[in-house]
Image 1 (cartoon, each protein chain N blue to C red):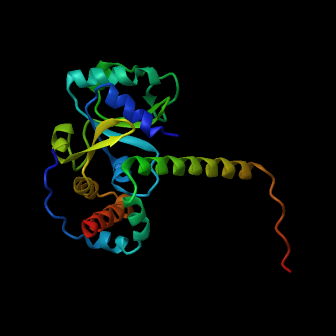
Image 2: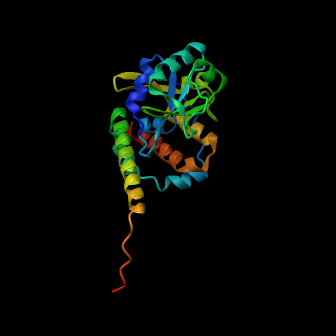
Image 3: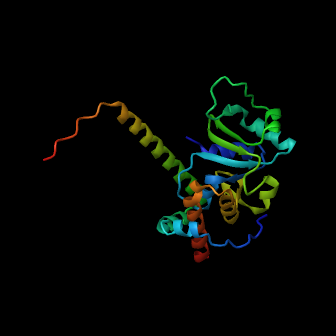
Length: 161
Length: 70
């Protein structure tokens, strides 16, 4: 099971620049669908990658679904050479994304993020409208129900305000 | 930080899916704090995990033969 509070605290207290996206962002906005991993878009700067590697190192990140014994090492150079990583850690499933379809990089998304305060930390989460844009742009049929729910949330929020 | 987004054009496929969305559940969730929403997600994860475990266990147990019709 993914320990969302702990993963968020580890990243935020480690000084990592990241934006919560995907199903966890949908949860933050009020969606009720089950998601099992935390998806974040991380800033690809050298300093941020260093912070990311240091913050997660105690939790043994490894490539999710990969056979044990692969020569995967959790270090800065590996993150520099790759872009998106689907990881399993001692505190849950974490997708580290350098870029997302229809949304781009951290720099592209940061202006569309909202600040969340939860579990004693602050972090950025992709805003509801941009999240819908991104999911629409990805065009995956499996997302249609989720997009419908997010658009209904947007309508309900506007109705309530 | 938060840039105003251009309005979304309705998509007929999504509009069709939207008819089945449970808005009572959405209103209930919108009354929660963000932290409470994540807590609810984790309870749902625990429940899904327990169901998966019980399902696997049931598969391994010999099942009784179906009852003959009355």
